[in-house]
Image (cartoon, rainbow, N blue to C red; front, side, top):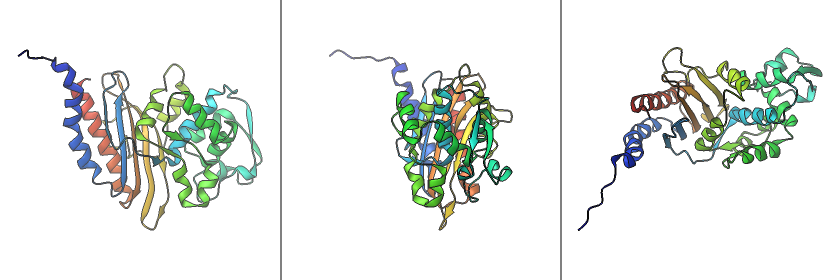
Length: 283
């Protein structure tokens, strides 16, 4: 009987995943809620995930595809955009723009609106950008044009502030978000990546346990806590590995009853585990 022999290289991706999955599952058990995570080395395609196909609320992570859709329109970045009083999100939402201009009705360069949305997660900036992009359906259409199916932008920050369950309409899978991150390039998206690197929210999430000085371009998303449950604690981003490769990672923690410190540590541990695995494998 003829024996078939296959090169061991054919099985390395599977062996790599099987070796990693138990650790991912062990960490995931600490979420006290619903977790979706996916990590991928952009240059090689090596990928790891856990519940990466589940639909989970994005919260402010959705400011990334909104900003990408606006930049795709090639509007002049120095063009002045009117911010009306009715554009200002309510006091319960994070908005440095609203805090600085409580009466509204002023003009701001598009460049600054984008920076506020991406680097500072400003809710007012996000809704103005969503309007400039043509609304939620147009942003989702832009995402589809990139070949990405499992991200939906459906509502504004203003609408999400009115009813807690509305946020579930803006959803993504961790795998689809990594696909979106892969579309970013230093050549064409340098400004966006700069703002993501300068982003101030969530320093204890993806960045939390990585070596000091690691370059992380990321976007967080966080809901409020209602009845002891936090609907979304998220972070997605591009991490520069020691050899210059890039790890795209998306972590969504949904419907969790863990406290903020535990949720952020969970994200940090998942990012560090992926970092360790990718740097150890060199793949």
